[in-house]
Amino acid sequence: IDLNNKIAGGYFFKGLCLGKLGEVDGVWSSLGVIEPLKQNMETAVKLDPTFENGGPHRALGKMYHELPAILGGSPDKSIEHLSEAVRLSPKHAENHFFLAETYSAKKEYALAQSALNTVLDLTKDSPFRQDIHTIREEARELLKKTNKYLDNGSNAKGTENP
Image (cartoon, rainbow, N blue to C red; front, side, top):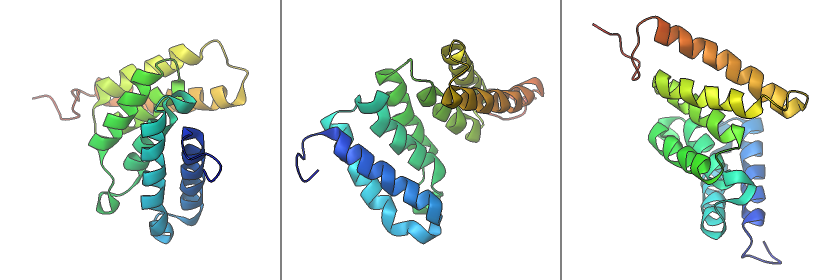
């Protein structure tokens, strides 16, 4: 950033490092990290939202999903950013996976199911890469839970059918 403050990568990776530090320390121990992470990712979005397959939007979406509401977490903002990451990089499985996680948390199971099926479709030809194998396994587990809710008569919003 000091050498060239017009490149999204510097802000993206600085924000990513802050986020990882926050994960290690725990949300409540790293309250001072939230705003700088958000500012770095928002700057990266302004400079190049397509960087790292929609990475700045993916990181913001994940942050809004994982933060408690009292600290600024918002499922709607998460979906907004993750949907934009999907739009920018529709063949990047992580964008769909994190979107599915937020849909599932909001009990929007049909939308989660669709996103998870996309993850499995996108990753079917790369089962030998460890990162792909991991995301496929996580997607399968979340899909099982999602399907269970749908099979038990929950509608797309997660409420019981009359």
